[in-house]
Image (cartoon, rainbow, N blue to C red; front, side):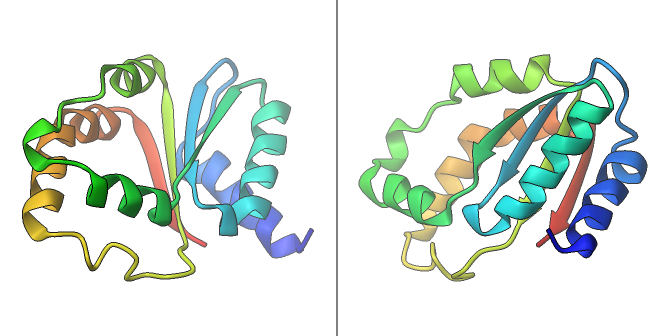
Length: 133
């Protein structure tokens, strides 16, 4: 592993989110950032915390948004429960196509964001860090 990736993970764990033993951590990252996710898991294990990783695929999000009716969006209670139980949230950005969702209707994006606003509020109320990979 490139030592810069390990160093990046150390900054996130030790500085950005001040990870503590026993913390429950949610990591959302695209597959392009797999090396960083691995380094984060190693450090989280070293610190005695508990990681859960979610795929942050913009392609999957695009497929879902394009197939959905904006009037049907509701807060996903199972995902909200995960965020309510976590102590730390780590968001990794790094897409292979930064414009992946550019063909999703603005009304659809807005409706999805409105439905998910309580989850954003919950995440921002915890220790969190965001990074670009």
